[in-house]
Length: 413
Image 1 (tube, rainbow, N blue to C red):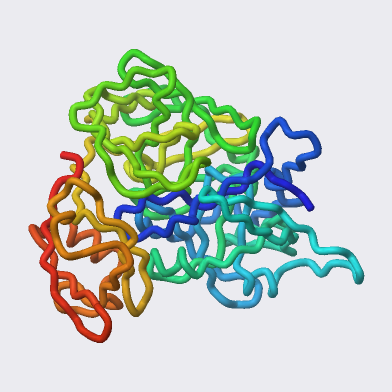
Image 2: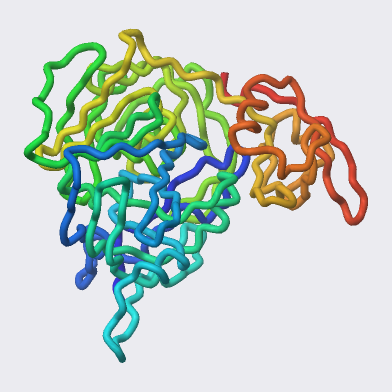
């Protein structure tokens, strides 16, 4: 059995829909002898029929989701996760595209321990090929995982997560504003390294662990962060050794998972700007963590981000010269686990107006403002949170439906 220290799923804030198991932590420390870093293995060969291939993308809950038609003629959806060294695929996709093991060969397992103490084994396979547009990746190492809950969270089927090492021999561009993914052959068609400007910044990254680590600056302090497109958050900040100053908070937020188990998240707005190369993020909202600091989709969505693993450089382009500003984090004080039939309340944030109402963890919501929850896509509900002063949830208690009007407030102004 292989123990892989680098496998993780997208890290999701529990603002209104994320289940607690999404962040998986491997039960093997980096220093433990005998660990095999399975997740860093790259495809055996990469083939691009053209110099570049472009796929439309959707930014859902700050995740970068692409669709691609594979060799069976069906279309599959993938999250591009620069924070993961491993590629994960659904059992259905694995069944169609995994190389057959020789008869009698034991199945390879990756032993994974979740942040809340549970343990699971993920089966490791090799995909014959993975197509992303006209880009063909052959013999791709992958792990099998059931994405049912994540699909329910996002409101559309997810078939896999594509890890950073898959793109080792290409230029990878994640165009968040334009909502498209561009894969270019390398090095023949690598663009020249541009000079710095307020709109464009090229930063060297450390790729020794198979994921991109870059320096950023907070006030007059510099520190290292992971560029993690598999997180929907902004800046997850480990304050150890740093001196963050807050304009608001930090205050208790929703539940997150850690090595010590589930705990309340601390979130707040910095009273300091954050600099990524030449780009300024003005007094961002941050979440405190005891793990490696990282920047997620809430930061990245302002940029066109190009990763050049040949040069170990990342380029961030923004079609504006002013500082990036972040809206207040609005909330009803509730977090949910979503399904098509009902949304189950995971937690009620303490010391909020909602904490005084007759709602509690475990309650089932079947309607929002009178409409069945199935009618509320992730994006539609997120837009409602941005604009509404209050939301009426219909809770199912036994066989009886009860309406509860909940105020929407600024959890972090």
